[in-house]
Every structure is written in C-alpha cells, then in structure tokens.
Amino acid sequence: MNLRFLGGAREVGRSAVLVNDSLLLDYGMRSGTPPGFPVGSVDPEAVVVSHGHLDHAGAVPGLLSGDARPPIHWTPPTGELARTLARDTLKLHGGSYRCPFTETDVKRVTEVATTHGYRE
Image (cartoon, rainbow, N blue to C red; front, side, top):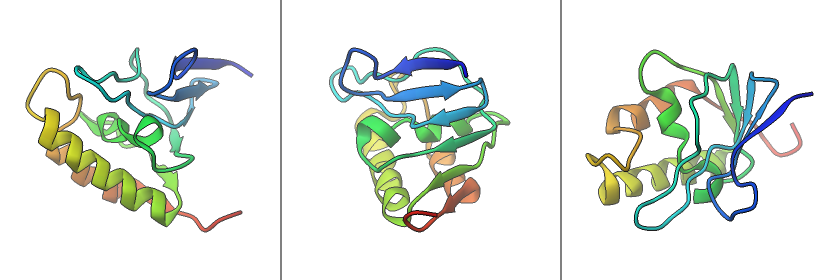
C-alpha cells in the first residue's frame, strides 16, 4: 500500500491522504490568513470524507474544477456541513488566489456526492 500525505502530517489542518494514487481520504484546509490547502495535484478515483470539519472537508470542492468528477462519499451530516463550510470559505476567500475552488465547484459537489449511513 502506498500512502501520500498531501497535508495533515506534522500539522493541524488540511488533512489529505492519497492511497495507492486512487483513493483520497479527506481533503481539508488549514484556517488562517492565508488559508492552507493540500499540496500537489491529485486525480483520485474516489474520495471518502471522514467528518465535516474544515480541516478534513474544507477543500473538497477544489477536486471538482476542470473535468474531474470523482465520487465523494460521506454521511449526511458531513455532506451538509462540508457544503456550508465551502460556501463560507467562498465568502471569505472566493475570487482570490487563496481559494482553489469556485461557486460552480461547490454546486458540483451535490452532483457527485453519495451519502452513507453510519457503519455502511
């Protein structure tokens, strides 16, 4: 198994772990001025978000810019909170070089997200 830490290693925030170049576990951001986002470009086959905190889900819409549309898997509360956090991030940083996603990317999240119950 190959693990690549794109953030969250030796720091609090921007948790993102790529497994075997295909499965992305979390894709968060680090709050602050400027905010911090995972490093490196990724094109995962699927994304699993563990929970709806900013440091685990805050950068997820950035995965949907361009043609990429990996399916995103999370629980219903995680999805709701992640979308709320994304809209708030756009209010604070949207339109600046510091924000790697747009309102269109946030809307795309709904198109590719699949919710799962606990222990599914």
